[in-house]
Image 1: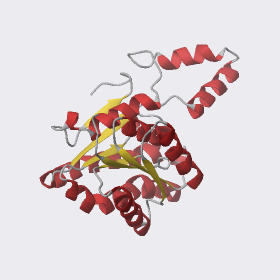
Image 2: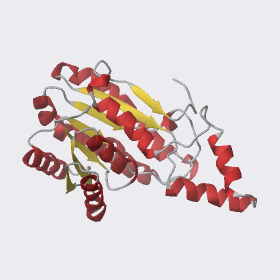
Image 3: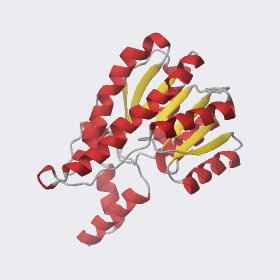
Length: 259
């Protein structure tokens, strides 16, 4: 197994990509700590790994609170004895307002989660990651930092800052044996995306598959990007298969853009 004997903490792991990442990490042998604000969702994620035959533990934590992050790391260490990988998936999606109409206080709150919250959890994990001897940090960014869409500025602007810090941390932490990389998903197929596309189909009075096909055609592979597929990219970055990579961006968008 790629991650046999390793321990990974996944933030924002109550559902969606975070849950998928935890399940895929566990499938490759990692013991997984799920962290999220939603206790019921954390419990569901832990249960899903147990049902898959893996080992998992859950902790409720607000990544913008340093004490909560410290408790999450301490909980991981007391439960599994070590920490080898941190997957930063917790995020705030922003208010989807164009800049001219935006309340910048709302944008600041988004940045507080996506940038400073992520850095807070990362800083809290550093001692444990150094102690592992081969720490791995995976940031979840978005291909929206380059595939520009109006009204996504709060979210993509904060993720662009996180993209910079991925490179900065890679440069600063390499000497400690810690690798820092990022995965940049395109739109992920799921309830939210399907609902958005169904609404478009309704507004245009066409069958949903017509809109689905047009959406898939935006990428080279003509397919929807799934949470499991992105999670497999996270497994790669957390494993020794990527041992020569640090400060790198892995665009998991089925070829909607090329880098």
